[in-house]
Length: 240
Ligand code: BTN
Image (cartoon, rainbow, N blue to C red; front, side, top):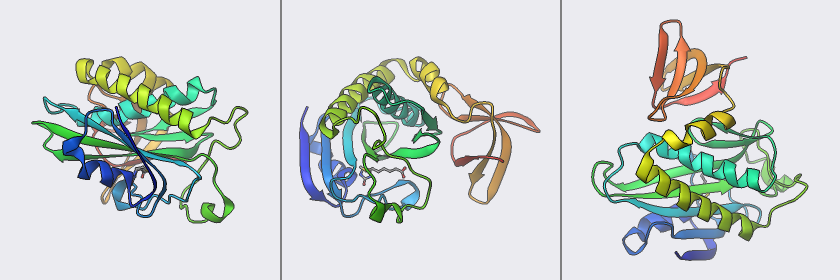
């Protein structure tokens, strides 16, 4: 595989999408600074120079992808596995693919697609992971965050990138061959919301229930007053 390294770029996701034709599964793009980093739901991903890890990986599903939903969970499981191998404790996941450390967001994933899910499908998996948050940047972030700066063994950025690339390659291959089943247990072990009262925001709707994990497609399962139901979208949070 290849790694395209930039000092500065608008967005590593945009780079991969633009060059999808020339790439093979597992190729990555990494940058020290993104001038137009993208987050989920049209948000900006604040990407100050040199502070954090910003990278994107290309992946192609030649037969199309039956389980787009499951992919988010697989990527989250890969990140958790790498962090745990590095000795980072108290890592958790928030459906569908946010990574938390001590209950504050450590990393986010933005998956974008070119092509259709039912034919050849080209994906970019973008990951932003906070390493050392400077005070001047913290103010720009509109949610509780964490970084790796307090870790006893602070991983080196390049080492982290290499481990993530390897783990993602391995897990995406497994997902492509065997679907989500091999990941269910890993997800469950890291799921921060399992068994907790939650609310799911979907547009104007707010659904209250108790989180019962994810189904075989990767949709979130909530136990509500009218029984157990799976949901494929929305923003989940704890109810206090
Ligand atoms: C989120 O909103 O939680 C997802 C954030 C994803 C950010 C990463 S940083 C590398 C890649 N390039 C982008 O423009 N976004 C993703």
